[in-house]
Length: 384
Ligand SMILES: *[C@@H]1O[C@H](CO)[C@@H](O)[C@H](O)[C@H]1NC(C)=O
Ligand SMILES: *[C@@H]1O[C@H](CO)[C@@H](O)[C@H](O)[C@H]1NC(C)=O
Ligand SMILES: *[C@@H]1O[C@H](CO)[C@@H](O)[C@H](O)[C@H]1NC(C)=O
Image 1: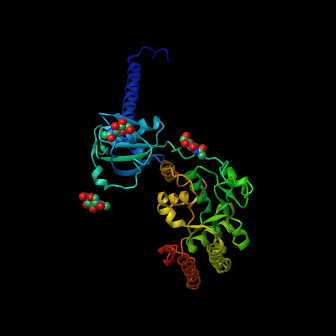
Image 2: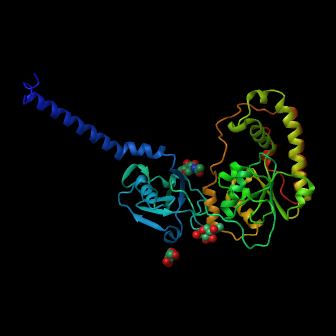
Image 3: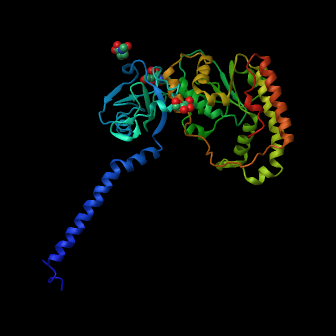
């Protein structure tokens, strides 16, 4: 039966058709991956971030360790090139691809109007490659590791500096930034194994070891405050702080308190007790500590560079602009609770607000009396 088909011209035709079909499909896949597909993939790529349009630095040779001339430049070519060279910025300047890090020569702090960068790439008209003067900047998937090395303090005269905050004020995040910005580990008055496992190596030390640049504490008694030589006081909007702490306290590993507790009696009781505690904690640090530096969580979030610089100077360390810029690039860290859950409604009643606003006012007055600036404006905003 089959042998009668062998050598039949029909079989050859069939094989020929299969061959041509494969060739055509292959050709289209290749074509798609050359432009369309890669183009789409590129912009969806979570590891590559568009940073914006920036004016080129005065001396590009000084600002970038690597500069390549690419007559047929595309975004992908430059990003791939810089990624391969293990550099975390890909800077497109027309036909030049510059790779490097953000440094004092190119700090990426002043964004230009994006329209200045809308110039087609020589090798891909769908994409923008900027010009010699206005550069399109992407962050590659290469992590900025310049500030990841940290060590314990050695040989310094022992000094205990508190990093004081009320629970829920972003203490862990601030420690992360301080470690990156200073190059030294931070310690804690407590021991939290999960933080140690996440790389906070100072967590295991006795808090009086003197090996850490500052020490996390939520304490607020006069005696405990006075045990420190100087202090950083981290303050966060109590509305946010209370919600964060309620979720931490009742959310367990999920990090989000059950709806039953939000809607029941637990939340109002919590607000009553904790808003009072928020104020007394803050007021105690303002009155009992020696040299004091106040940081507002919200301001730190808004401008890491400026406020982290203030912290480094208060800690009496030499400033490294590159470390600060690197810390800015690593701003989130890998320990944040998922922000997926949102409450979906405003949990603060009018009574709660009146009482919280009263506590904010007290703290504001105490701050001003110590010649600090008062609480940020948004603490007074009646919205969450
Ligand atoms: C730019 O920087 C490089 C390397 O530091 C230096 O050799 C060169 O002279 C500088 N050029 C200008 C115009 O400043
Ligand atoms: C950017 O420039 C365009 C065109 O000059 C202008 O219409 C637009 O308002 C500018 N955008 C900003 C944010 O300045
Ligand atoms: C981290 O590395 C940089 C560059 O290699 C070095 O100058 C700095 O002293 C190191 N810092 C620490 C804390 O080890």
